Image (cartoon, rainbow, N blue to C red; front, side, top):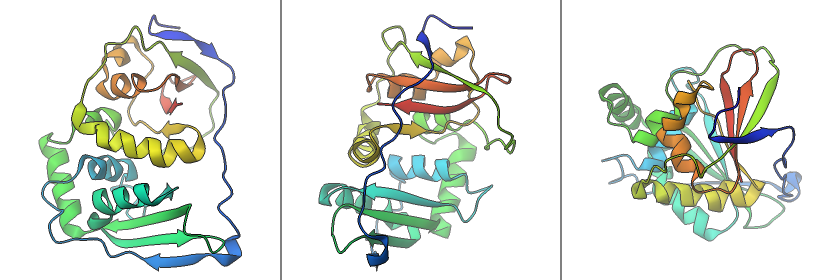
Length: 227
């Protein structure tokens, strides 16, 4: 079934780029020491989103690897994310400063506690709540999928200026590096009700192309690809 907020079913679209970071044999790891003194109240929206995406209840050792094309992105990650984690590293390749990667793992205990309290009380950012509605599906079986492009002109835009800083980081880090932004929503089903989802409405309004990957048999949505 195709709804009026879908342009069309697509059979193919551009894949992600895989940039050459340099010689991996010349990898240099630098421990990061962000300012952890005053960044815990409240959690930044970027930290809320990333903590939710890590699904720590299921994967306590999950880590984030973020591409860093330049110093501007480095400064943003140092400010918005690094203070909340106990293991933080910059990984440089081929003797170059940029591009590099930043690895984040094991949120601070106080951060995890605060995040869980916000989650239980329903005070997480509405886009974060809408993107991650439930725990990740443990069903690892491969299933046939279909791809539907969103008609953003039909969806009602969800304006949320506070989330623009997070979106800007995603564009300058992930989109700039890979040529697309691939999100992994949890608890999304391909029904007409999805048109009201704040996360779908927000993200699709900021990209020319927004494509849902849907399991043909179950209707579960596994990816939202933006470019």
